[in-house]
Image 1 (cartoon, rainbow, N blue to C red):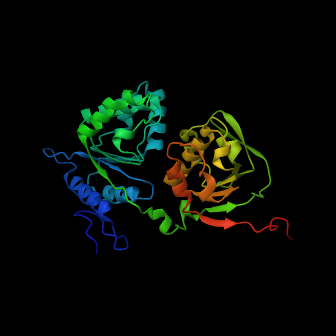
Image 2 (image 1 turned 60 degrees about the vertical axis):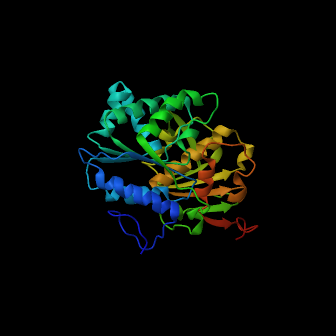
Length: 328
């Protein structure tokens, strides 16, 4: 059996590569120190490309921490709840306090900063966490120095980056292998299909989202079938998509075009959609005009699109046979 670090949960079927083993060892040290009064552990910032096992490492670490005073959030989910709490409690400090409770360990999956408004909230949140001596463990596709990469806005976030480097150890789990491409899952998100062809599902129904109505093909019994342009072509947020997951557990996205033919904000909403459904482990199927390898091949850089394309690589690939839709 591979060495995974004292206190971690053994999983013989998983063989860790060098970078993953280093991360597992360091996480095991943190797990053994959470809750100690005099030797509070430093936090850890794990970064690497998509499919590098960062969430798997976080799963194992979080399960190994014996303290009940621990919290774990996907970044989209946390900020949806944080913003809702700001409206409810009247400020970010009160909202953060309600979310954190008595936590001594906070874990974030997919930590990222792309928007100046989010950057200000994140900086305030980091001040709160470090002032309370909460141990912070995050996973990210970006090293700290590349957060808020827009050169016009990056300087405003540099003080927050300095605080991250002051309070967290930084460890790379980069490597050449995207483990998602070694084999598709067959439950949850991975039960979906990527079909090159046309969605033949008929129908028209209106679905309320973000104070507007979205025209879907079908919506009911926990399933939503909707065209890409109808959902990603309107100004909705990750929080709005997250709200829809309470009603729909199986999603079908139709008529997805090559992504270089649509505006970047449409592409960004696809990134949000895949992030939210992947984190919730809800089934997603796509009907696209081109294979997944070509979907974003010619598009200008959109933050986190490469993670989306990696995740879509877990779906079972199908190609409609010519004339199959009309054959009797």
